[in-house]
Length: 179
Image 1: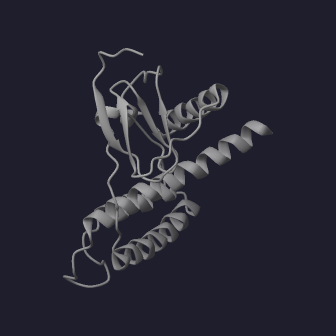
Image 2 (image 1 turned 90 degrees about the horizontal axis):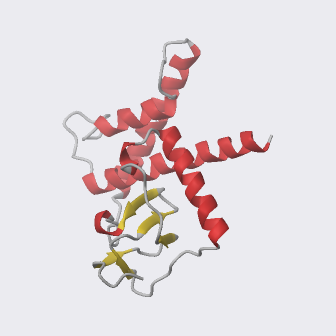
């Protein structure tokens, strides 16, 4: 191990997190398409399995790592090097905001699925379009001049929903590969 590397204290929380040294990302992970991202995560998970790596646990949620350590959070599909990794501590959600986002997403998804049946949806899936619709709301859409939605809860909701859709896509790709 190179002792000249800078050490970072990062918050990994209680999620399933892998700390991987000796692996480099070819490109900035955030700029990959969803298909390229899915493929990269599958390759990373294959590497983890081949190398027999195990998730890291921490009593207080913090871990000290080298600057060239790759951090992979299984729950969110987040991948980054230690210096750029940010996992928020004790993320709390506003239940009202979460309920409004869930309801609006369901309504928007229903709309885009109907549009898809009529052939007027091109390029994006109804799920992607519904998430895009949710990303634009700042207030409860059913109440004129309603209270603002909680921005932190919305950000967490968006991240979780995107992760959930990516997980579903991975499962579909794996099922297709097994056939």
